[in-house]
Amino acid sequence: MNKIRTVNTAFAEIIEKDPDTALTKTAIRRILKSGAIPSLQVGNKVIFDMNDLEEILDKGFIKN
Image 1 (cartoon, rainbow, N blue to C red):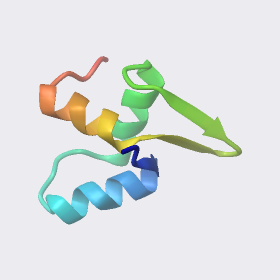
Image 2 (cartoon, rainbow, N blue to C red):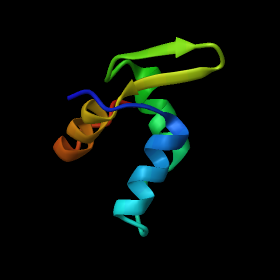
Image 3 (cartoon, rainbow, N blue to C red):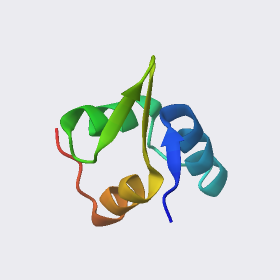
Image 4 (cartoon, rainbow, N blue to C red):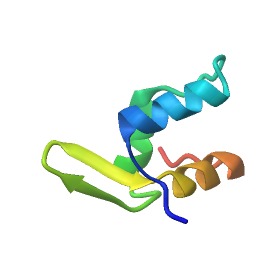
């Protein structure tokens, strides 16, 4: 099932699961901008599937 999120909602979900995370909103934005996961600009927000972000983070792959 798709879990469509914005950067802010994804970050809040990550913080809830791991309050001591080193991941930042800027890091999420950079992952999206790199094209490592598909995203869509809707107005002034970017949306994406949280499952894709979690998969990238689990693999430890972040494209600079």
